[in-house]
Image (tube, rainbow, N blue to C red):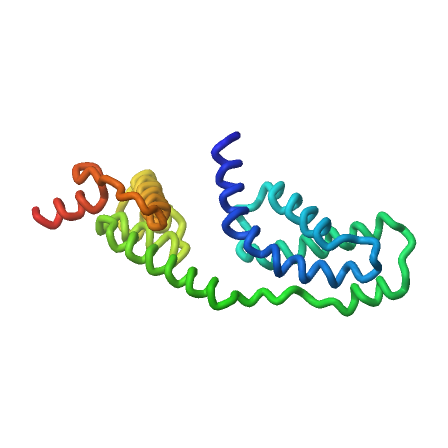
Length: 197
């Protein structure tokens, strides 16, 4: 299994699997004819979602999953070829799934955002500025290089270091085991050493 496959599976477990109860409720709207099982629809939708090659570009996983589920249901109707009038009417009446995050998801998102802010604040000054210009203000590496008077390769190195540090920091946030930090190699240690100079 490649690293990309592992990342995709982690994304799927984190973003899509928690939607299963909502997707199941949504799938029941498509199964009023008694010929289709809602769980089968959800599992078919999961299969399509996890196979998606452009999963990194999905900005709203809940909307993507509900649209995929609806497409799976439509495909099932097309395969049957004989459609009842009620089935067609039901599809026209069914709206999208409610994609408003619940209170638990909102709290988790806020906590993750707080952890990300803390991780970014721990980056060395120049790396933090490059990371913020790219991720918050969506400037290209070339624009950042011109603005900060750096080479594009230096900007890209700062971005990689910032991304690596933040992803490691956020990945460790849920760990119960203490992680030993080598002060000579960590960003926090480097920042502290830079501040002492």
